[in-house]
Image 1: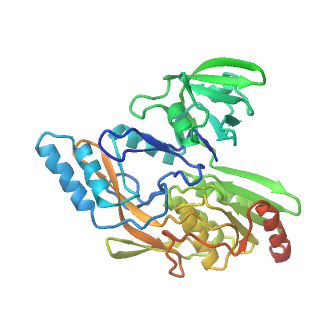
Image 2: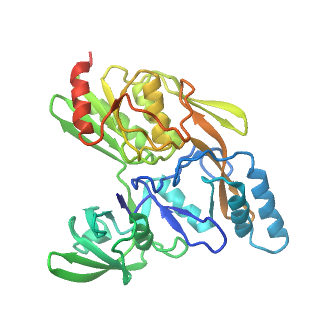
Length: 392
C-alpha cells in the first residue's frame, strides 16, 4: 500500500474521536470525496470511504435537526451531528469542522498543505519514500526517493498504516497550516538524521502522460481534482495521429464528479454518462458533444478505482467506447449531500446512488473489467490496443 500526503479528507466519526485523514491513492483506506455543485448545500457529492456498503438515505433532516437543537440549547452542533450520524448507519457520512472542510475543499482544487512526500509501507513495516515533489519542503531538505522515513515529530512510524503516517505529516487540520514545522526522522543507508521542514501549500499533479511504443499514449489520472478533464483533453489532442490511448485509473479514488463527466466528454460524442437519485428524485449526467470517438481506448482499473473513477469507467464500458482491463473496482456509488451546520461545521450525508448508463448499480458491487489482469495489466492493455488497430 502506498500514498502521499495530499488530498486529505479529514473525517470525524464520533464525539471525542481523533481525526482520520483519508487521501487519494491509498487503496481501500479511502479517498477524495467527489462533488457535483460546489459548496455546502449546493448539491450531491460522490464520496469514497473505507469499505463497500449500502448506506441509507433520507436521514439528512434528522442530522440537521439534531444540530439545530444543540445550538438552541447552547451545545455543540458538530458533536450532536456526529452522534446522529453514528446512529444513522450511514458509513459514508462525514462531519467536518469548518477548518477541516476548508482544507478538504483545497484538496479538491488540486492543492494541499504538506511536505511533498509520497511513501509506501514495505513488507517489514518500514516506510519508504517513493517520490519527492520538486520544489517541495521535502525536496529543499534533500529528502530523496528510497530514503526510509523512521519518525514524524519524534513518533516512530514503523508498522503504521500509510494513512496514519500521512496524518502525522499533515498534523491536525485545525492548526497544521502552511508554515508550521514538522520533524522528520530519516535514514539513507547507514546514515540516520533528522530534518525539520515547514509545511507548504502545494499543487497536486493529478494527470501524468507518457508515450509508449507504437503510438500508445498512457494518460494516468490520480484523482479528479479541478482541471483534470481539460488536462486529459489536451493529452488526447496531443497524442500522435492514428494513435491509441490507455486511460489509467488504477488507484484513482474519486474526486469531482464534474471533472469525471468532463473526462467522459473527451471520449464520447454526447449522451448519457450516469443517472443518480437524490432522495428519490431521478437525475442524469450527460457528456458534451464533440469528443474523440475514433482513437482506440483501454481503461485500466483495480480495487483502488473508486467513486467518480467508477462512474467514468462504467460510462465508457457501457457505451462501448472502451475495453476495461484490470480487476474489479472498489464499489462506491453512493451520493453525498453537504449541509452547513449552525456552527459552521459541515455534514456530508448519503442521499442516493449512482447507476451506469445500462442501469448497473456500482455501490457494493464495483465494475467488472472486460479482461481480468493484475500484474502486467499495462502490457495486456497494449496487446488489446494492437488488436484494435489505429484511429482512422
